[in-house]
Length: 85
Image 1: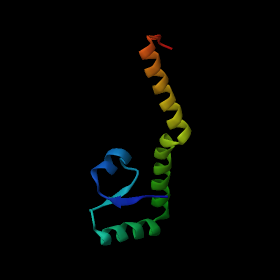
Image 2: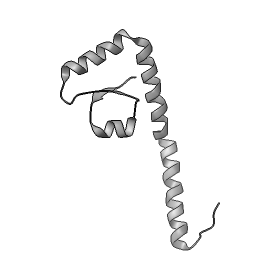
Image 3: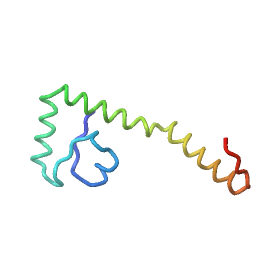
């Protein structure tokens, strides 16, 4: 689904152009953007697909694998196993 959110710096930093932002607290602007997406299903679909692609980076299996690799790297470093594999 496409995302419409308040314009907080962290959203742009994290999500880039995978969402639409509106001024903080501006409920009229929020309603306008949601209505815009409802009237423009092609744009809504494109934005939703962008968000879906972005979120794949946060699939639990991908995140867990990255965390395990980091933990193993820390353990290897502490044990003196500095081999590059």
